[in-house]
Image (cartoon, rainbow, N blue to C red; front, top):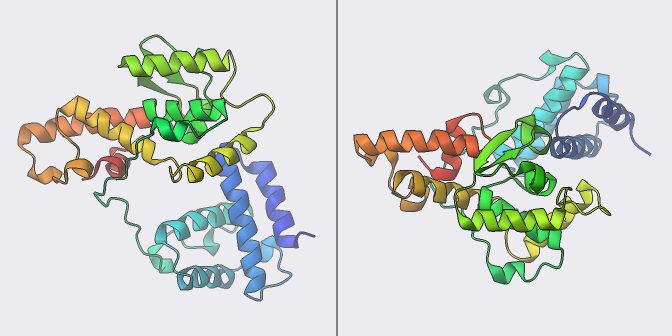
Length: 289
């Protein structure tokens, strides 16, 4: 039987969470974990509105003791803050992570996190829809959710893809150019497979297909699959600038010539849009600094 805290939190999540499926899923998981760990910490029988600063501080202390990364802690705190806002207790948790003793995460490492999808890996995947999602992800730098929800027939606009907002993180549609014969070929094959549907098989839900994606990536040594987006960004940068990005070359932007710096800036703005981000600073995670 669910605790009062979890019951009330889940009710709020169902009523007010208007984000993408992925965000909803992560929020449900985070809240379930918070409830479980509050009980383990000795805070039994509290209601959602009974949540106090000392409860949140105890959670943060536990996460730090467990040596979780600052990024993981910040992500969990984002869900906790969402809850406190919904119960009109915004002041319960400081908006400053620094004041809570949470260190800044390190976004940019200048390490090459790109991965390449090999035919030998694809040959191990019996699910044709999932195989096609991975190929599209590699060819166009799609997020995994986009690579499953995309309706190839609808997205194909000749010389570019148009990703519908309902397929994308944050509900932001975007345009990605079709520049190579390889991209055109994989898109044509995706259209033939999906017909006028998405790349989620009719007999499965998105959640079921996502679980298959996660398990498959582990089985074929693709990690979480996100490295495919890194490789797309690296290749686009090379095409746009004529030289490798810092994450690949190891050469910092400050060492580039004035002309190269201008080219670098223009390329980052283009790649930021194609990846579906709002700020070029985020793209530095892919390209290096």
